Amino acid sequence: MQEIKRIKNITLARVVAVFYAIVSFLVTIVVAISAIVNIITQGDFTGSIAVVIFFNLGGGVLLGLVASILIGSFGWIIGYISAVFYNLFARKYGGLKVEIAGIKIKDNFSQLAKEEKGIDPGATSVSEEEVKTGEINNHNNLQ
Image (cartoon, rainbow, N blue to C red; front, top):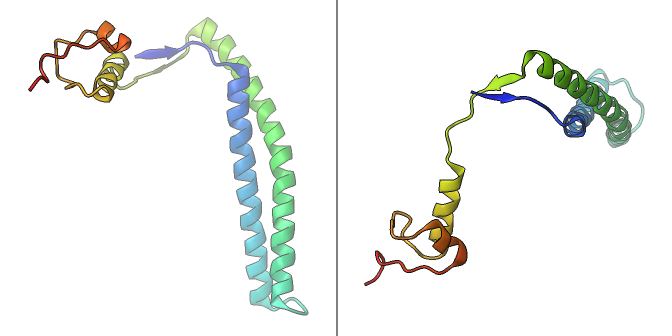
């Protein structure tokens, strides 16, 4: 188990702001579309259906942009404050414990480097230093 001991305030603020902005924009578009459907099904308009659709979608997009900016700003503040509180509690009581899949990153990078240089990834005669410097004497791949 790994423990998240600290979260960078700005990072969490940015993520929450973007999430809030996207969700608020999508919600306003859904509301605009439902308003169009409601107006058309009830026949509660005069003039062209195209004008009703254009007006409501245009208003929905404009309202969505304004809502995204405002709600995204509030999301940034909420994310920042949340990170501050998390860091205070994590320092005093311990952070969240998460389990991360066992991936050996160093081994994967070495294998990728070997594959890029045309070496059999299973070759044991190649050292990590040889892969990094490009000075490879691969005896397993000689024909």
